[in-house]
Length: 202
Image (tube, rainbow, N blue to C red; front, side, top):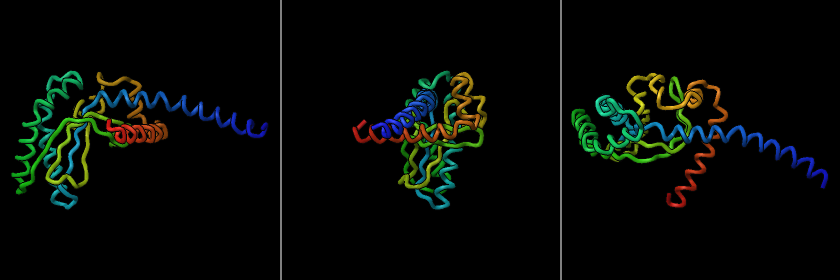
């Protein structure tokens, strides 16, 4: 009994310490995921031409996003504008598809989606459920492409565009490079939560 207690108590204390370290990161990640709108494009297939077409559609949509989100002050407003502009988004994507000699259909929707941790050149976005503008080209069986549509980091590539939309702590988390272990833990927790939610029909 004493031996079991000797093993259990330190193990319990370690788990408590880990929980105390990880919990704030999970909370911060979940808060961050509610402050950005992501762009998610699925190519028709993984063949070279379809992947190249996906990037052309990306460029067209990102160019339009400069007009779409001009003067936008919140993610809620960005989501609302996106939902009201889905027909225009589809039209722009379809036009790009046709100009490049393809006849694929295009679908677009604004929805919440689960993302794994995503590493960009200057920042990282933690795993979690994010609001997304999702565009599907043709069968949508090819590799995905993601970026942050609002704030307009896609367009500028500058992490300063997060300023005013996320907290200093959240910005440190995604730009400092010192949260990799915590972000992996967050991903495990968020993936599990997403699977449970999906299983329960959420």
